[in-house]
Image (cartoon, rainbow, N blue to C red; front, side, top):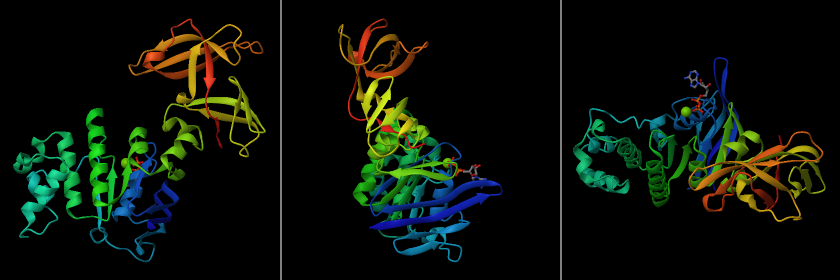
Length: 350
Ligand SMILES: Nc1ncnc2c1ncn2[C@@H]1O[C@H](COP(=O)(O)OP(=O)(O)O)[C@@H](O)[C@H]1O
Ligand SMILES: [Mg+2]
């Protein structure tokens, strides 16, 4: 069932088009990630949903109720929407407990109990309750911000790059905590992030924004496997992009003839392979299929980048491919390797 419907929302600031006719529907209990480069309109979209900005045109409907169109506007505090921003935006003069309990009634009998429960939910030690924000680490501050937003039992939670100031390890822990808390409370959530791993693992729907436009919207697997264009392909992960000639379900390219999904395009196009579709094995003399020489290996721990040179009799210049390999099966520079491709290549639309 559609819970939030974003219907042809546009917003400009002077000459800057921040959002250009955005359409999106979000299911109840769903988790949506919005990704896109800086300035693509992610925050503007969240602020319009939250009610801090008014769209120039379009409509916003939450659970059957119109929150905004050019005629009607429900104020932010009456929308039942929680928001956690990048910096947490805690009240510096209030203790952790008072920050979390800010929206709760002052003299409610269960106030302290509820604050304790929220602290437990976001895995904050009870001894932190009396501290002030400056006495907390970045991760702890974000937990307080999350608990404060959850205190109001929002129907929709908006998270605007809430983990971006945290270290990698902490980000992952926080992401899992947030996903678990939201799932447990059945809260629909929209997460803005510039981290592809975060988007793909957190969400059941990913929206790609660029220059105020919605470039692609769909489940993480679909976007990762079948991105529309180059930018989306490379944003969502390592991509091997090759020029190809497409005809009847085959792509002729530097790696020979690969199978592609049919019906999309014929003639010249760009195809994409994900590195996990490629296996490099020691080449045996006379073996079929494409071979190359390992030119360079960039050690990266668990994952290594292997630069493979493919010499072609019909061209003056060799082709180079960067292929990500898992650490225990990396070849050495100078090795002759066979390049095996698994699955189908994806043809980019643009
Ligand atoms: N209050 C504002 N006044 C003027 N321009 C703004 C305002 N808010 C955002 N913009 C502009 O709108 C565009 C989208 O901004 P924003 O939504 O913050 O992008 P993102 O969150 O994806 O980085 C940018 O070009 C930004 O400069
Ligand atoms: Mg932003």
